[in-house]
Structures are given as structure tokens and as C-alpha cells.
Length: 393
Image 1 (cartoon, rainbow, N blue to C red):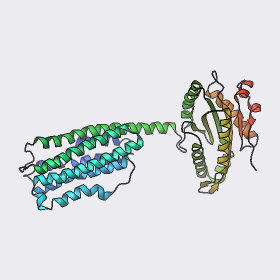
Image 2 (image 1 turned 60 degrees about the vertical axis):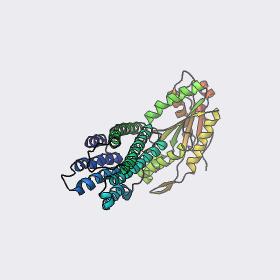
Image 3 (image 1 turned 45 degrees about the vertical axis):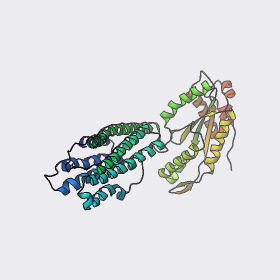
Image 4 (image 1 turned 30 degrees about the horizontal axis):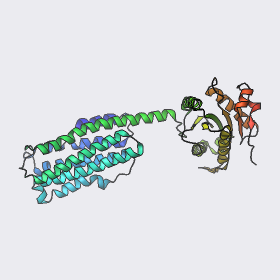
């Protein structure tokens, strides 16, 4: 128990973010004195060996339930966590329980089995929601553990035990040995699970903008090349939308950077909700964003851009300085096929965005595939950019 708790504490310590893992480590440390107290029966007061020893084991089980709930992000009930130990202490005040080994085994194993099944349920429900296979493995282990204690509870009731902890009973030995093995296996799985989740968090942090939670520039560029290749292989048109919030510096200067941050977050949330999960959306820097879409027809990208423009214009953005409104200019470009990479498409979309700004902002400008070829696919596409919407008065 001490080694298991130490191992979990070592895994938790570097980041110290997953409090559920800390509670699991504490739950094992709480159980450490239990076995020495139980082994010392006859040499120390019975209240210490019969009541306190098993009580500490049940206290550790309650803390394990707390840790499981915390890992799943659910609320914790202190009375439920303390219930196994409290029920045990109350049961030991009854002569019929305290005086009979079989009755004590029945109460202790029933409580342990119930909470093992409760922990299994928490892991299983979390696994279903998150799709985490390792959590299903932990759920299965706790089901086995609960079953072992259920067998132990029944067996302890029907067998006439002689007083003494180390009397030979094969079924009882197995019912104790199985949970001990499961503790080790479960700890290894829990450590692997935490490491995997920690790596997932690091990968997410490395690929997402911390303010808006959309892809950062590096991740957007990296994934865009893959989307472009897939589109060409599948014969699907890929279009790039370059978005820039109009006069955003004025928002920061007039209302403060905190209000500006709130504007960026709410605009990103709105745009993200308007595109598909398979599309890409990222922050390229400052108030500039990009969306990469797989579309059925060339006009589809222009229609999406126009819907985004109107949606942003109609937003009443709630900030600490009151409700604000902003507009967005959007440049659209399509993939022109083999021989031209994503950066080329981005240059053309950027040129279309520049044309939208020159035309009065709060507008969408696009460059079709035919226009791109006619202009040689270069930066000088601004004159060829087609303005499809104008500022609304």
C-alpha cells in the first residue's frame, strides 16, 4: 500500500494538477497502518485491531471513491465518502457483530464490495463519455474486486470461523489475494492512463491558442497541408477563408485589452459553431483568423464567408465595458490544384482580404480558380478579386 501510494504521488507531483490522483495516493497511505494493526490482534487492544484496522481500510476506500469522482470532474459528497468507515464503527458497537468473525467479515466485505462497484461505475461512465479504453479496464478490475468481496462476505457468514486472523481457509485466502493483485494492476493502469491524459493535455496546449481555444498558427498550417492533400485525392474542392476583425485596435484602445480578449473569444465561439467539425479554424495572430473548408461547389465557400460576416456583424458581444459590436473582412481563395501548395492559396486569400479592406471593410472578396490561373497564381490578384458583398449602412 505504501509503495502504491508513493508511486501515484510521484506521478502526480510534477504537474500537481489532477487532484483526483492525489486523493488516490492519500487513500493508500491511509490504509498503510491497517494491516499491522490487524496482525497485532491479541497483543494490542481489540478496539485497535478489530475496529480501527478495518476502519482505516474502509476510509481509504472512501477516499478512492472521492478521487475517482474528481478525476471524472464530478461533485464529491463528504458524507458518502465517510459512510463506509462510519457504518463499520457503528456496526462494531453491536455485540452480535463485534463478537463474531463471520459477521464482521460480512459487514466489512459488503461495504468494500458496494464501494468497489460504485468506483467501477464511475470509471465506466467516464470511459463511455470520454472514449478512454484504459478507464474501462479500471472499471473491469473494480467489478472483479467487488465480486471477490461479495464471495468473501457470503463465505464468511456461512463458515464457522475460529477466532484468529491466520487460520487456513482457501476461499478466504483467494478472496484477499485477488484484491491485492488488482491493486498493483490497477495502479499500473492508472499511471498509464494519467500519463496518456497528461500527454493529450500537452499536445492540446501546444496546438491551440490559449485565449480562444482554436488552433494556433503552427497547428493550423500543419493540418492544412493534410486537408489539402485529402481534398485533391478525393476530388473535393478545398477553400481558404482569411478573416480579419475591422478596426480591432480601436476596441483595445477605447475599451481596454480585457474587452478585446472577450471580443476575440466570443467571435471565435460563434465562427466555430458555424463550420463543421471536419473543417479547420485557427488564429494566425492578433485579430487575424483562417478557416479551411471542404466544399461541394466553389460558391459554397463564398456563401459560408458571407454568413460568417453577417453573423459577426449582428453579434452583441458582452464585455465588462458593456455590449460591443465588430465587423469582419474576409478573403476567399480555392485550391488551384497540383503544383500549388497551401501557402500559395494563403497568399491569394490574403490578397482577396486586402481587397475587402480597401473596398470599405465589412465585406467578402473572393478569387475563383479561373481568376487565379488568369493572374498566374501570384500576389497580384488584388485587381482580379471579386467583391461579393459591401458594407451595410
